[in-house]
Amino acid sequence: MKEHEILTPEIVEKQTIRREEMRADILRPLQQKAGILANLWVAFLAAVLLIGCFAYYLQLKHGLIVTGLRDYATWGIYISNFVFFVAISLVGALISSVLRLTNFTWYRPITRIAEIIAVAGVIWAGLIIIIDMGRPDRILNLFLHPRIQSPILWDVIVVTTYLTTSVLLLYLPLLPGIAICRDTLTNKPKWQRWMYKFLALGWTGTEDQWKIMKKSITMLCVVIIPLAISIHTVTSWLFATTLRPGWDSTNFGPYFVAGAFLAGTACVIIGMFIFRKVYHLEKYLTEVHFSNMGKLLVFLCCVYAYFNINEYFIPYYKMRGPEARLLTDLFSGKFAGLYWSAQILGMALPAVLLLFKPMRKPLPVTLIAIPVVVFAWVKRYLIVTPILVHPYLPIQNVPESWINYFPSWVEVAIVSASLAGVLLIITIFSRLFPIISIWETLENEGIEVEDLDKLKNEKV
Image (cartoon, rainbow, N blue to C red):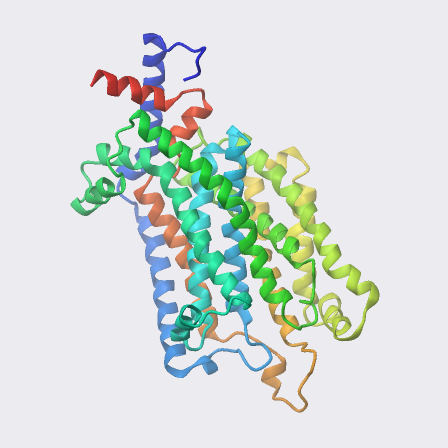
């Protein structure tokens, strides 16, 4: 409570009623049993995940020969997927922390959706790297025999550090919500009630608890900004430090960060729309939120377009050596369809459409965000694959399979399983915990939950 404000009994009663009303709205999806469609959705994701596990078993048993990876295309859709997951994980924590620090209060109901997308994305980003290794046991060598000059070690360090801070940034603001679940959802199974009790860490809403939590969140927000930028910058260095046409670029760091912002923002918009419809949260995820996120998407499309011009059209102006052959393939060759679709449908057209206010309504902006996400994945495929099949020193008389990469069903199954895994984490989380931060949303309405808890504890 601010110093000049006085909480009269009437104000306290009014704010308490509003708090209970919001609690009921947010907890309603957790109290209800999952419907048939929800169970079918989870079963579908689990089935895709199991098929992917079987495909990975075959890969472990027979080696990478079961994939389409060969001596030229050594990465393929596994690394494309890794870069995509790193991209969607960037925006959740970064935008959440930036807007928290700059006090953009309209964003508060969205923070948890963005943060769980970030956590799920970075978890599977780490797993897909292990999957890409023909010998996953060799990951121990990174810890037993580390070489600090290796960009791969840099990536391992920033990914694990970023995962830790992202989980903390999701968990700490969730503490009051977990305590509400502990005290309210008493009809849940024993394991679930025990989980709430354990994770709540004895939260009772005391003044010291609120002070420590808010201070910790502020510190995390400050720390996570350079971490979030560094994870995608270091990921870009994995490419930029390699002698390949198209990767030898000093533009890759900001180019990757700008693309990650775009993809992650589009993912958050889609998540907002789904939770708004499925959990009936129209009062909290309003048209204002979708309009603001649509404006942000326009801005990010323009920024990403700028870096695309730097990345492609300046080398195209010179058209020298192997770079020229690569750009010809992208602009007018066998990859031209994917390249121009990604540029037009995944960046240019969304930016133009979202300039118009009716297009920033919940349904239109979500439909526009979907191709942005799809072609963000395609864009990462185009960063990886065409460049690998254009080496600086081509080998003569190589098999056709080395020159033309196409993923096998094993790769497709594993990548599909990783996408299902991200969605499964988000789905399970939303069934166990409030998907909207109650206390932050109430603070956005001018209700200080900390003050209400203080009065409550004083009465006790």
